Image: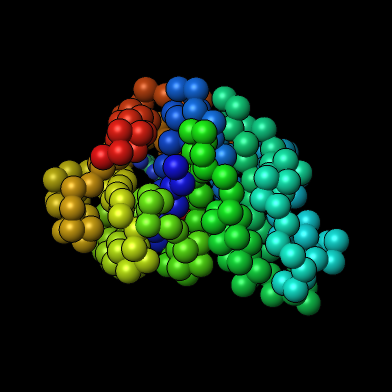
Length: 249
Ligand SMILES: Nc1ncnc2c1ncn2[C@@H]1O[C@H](COP(=O)(O)OP(=O)(O)O)[C@@H](O)[C@H]1O
Ligand SMILES: [Mg+2]
């Protein structure tokens, strides 16, 4: 199963991707967590030490460093995972697609999208492996990631009107891409109104993740919310989301 997590910046994509990965991995599933943000920080939400996150070599940066160009044959995704993936808790392997570091001759922006597409598209997801891609904010990366009809798109929004509007567009884009399973996540919901607005935007039921001080507290400490309290309200809601994904609902 491959899951692309999309939504506006600050919607909670990394928080949800990280906690979802942890819940699934803690149940014994093989999980590959792909950080598609050019400012990679999914590692923090997963519970990887900050120094490890900082020292990670993203795929695109590594390929540019060895002179790889678009004209060269695409590298083997399993080889890239073995080379550039780092160990995260519960056996998760974390890999970043690209990081903006300094001006370069190559098109780092487009290159990072291209890398995400190629990696997300080509990475093996059989034998029960679950690939969770925390995409760059906005819709561009979803378009580039080009999920298959059988992949899952998780559209995350917090209650602001802008976040919900981007969720509406992401849902419509995912449908245009032919994706059959699009799940909405009403994150940081504080009441029925928030949930209703998100359901209306997504056009279907949404998974509700409550606004949870424990998540914010973990963020301040630079820790994974799952490590601080796996039974906090938001973490339990994300556990239910994991079950829903596994059940194919
Ligand atoms: N359910 C929640 N309850 C409280 N705070 C949350 C919740 N989800 C996310 N946050 C906080 O919102 C901020 C943005 O979350 P993040 O996952 O980094 O968003 P994104 O990856 O979409 O930019 C972070 O400070 C995070 O701790
Ligand atoms: Mg993020």
